[in-house]
Image (tube, rainbow, N blue to C red; front, side, top):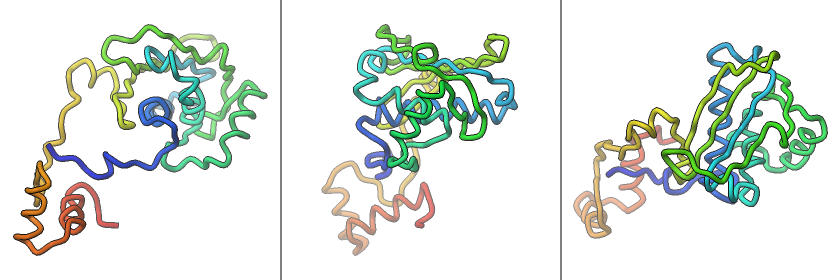
Length: 206
């Protein structure tokens, strides 16, 4: 199995990768999908439903806050944490949020955010997002699962066992510290140089 350092160590809003980072990413993905498919202007409201562990402990882990910020287009590694309290208060005071930061919709937590202890089918950290038009008709529904480490999959991936290991071929593969040090000795490289060469398979050095 190939695993990037950036999959192990992430920059992201806390306190939980599965309960905070994952829900924010899922909410942002849902909102971005509405814009991509031309549904943003037709959306009058959105209902978010958090199931299982998210429903049971989401308040304590900030899942509710993460969903609101994600719908406004924020991502866990770039959100301005200093602005969060004021933004959340503005949403709660006004009963509206700015979908992707550009489109105003109705949103009151008691009506549009549900915490449900019963889990969905594929994983204990499940979410359903629903978009409604001005007549109250549902125009889109998507199911997501926060599967740990900040990773999010939709119902298609979860339902077809598509959560698979990365099969990327690395220049210096290793499973043990002994194998890692073997590469260092054979190639006259430091541990950090070996890791940098492996990471370059996934992303540019910068």
